[in-house]
Length: 122
Image (tube, rainbow, N blue to C red):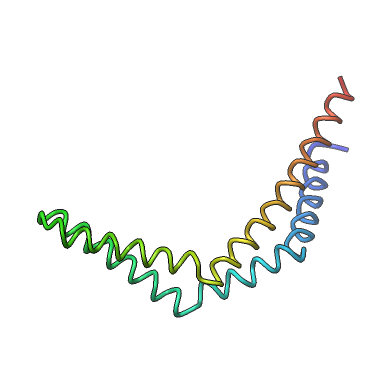
C-alpha cells in the first residue's frame, strides 16, 4: 500500500471515529444543552448586564470614583454568581465535563495503541 492509499485509509478511519464521537450520547447531550444555553434570552440578558457593569467599573476607575467603582464591582460579582448558578449553565458545565472525559478517554486509548505499535516495530 502506497503513501497516498495509507493516507486515504487513515482519513477514512478518522472520519469514522468523528462520526461515532459526534453521535455519542454524551456529545449529543452537550450539543443540545449548548444550543439551549446559547439561545436562552435570560442568559443573554445576564451577559449583557455583566458587560455593562464591567464597562461602568472601568469608567468609574478611570474617573477616580472609588465608591461607584466598588458598587459596580459588587454588582458584577452578584451577576456572575447568578450566571454561574443558573440551571442551564450548570447543566452545560456538567455535559461539557462528560463530553471532555469521553474525548480524553478516546485520545488516551489512541495514544496508547500508537505507542504500543511503534514499540512493537522497534
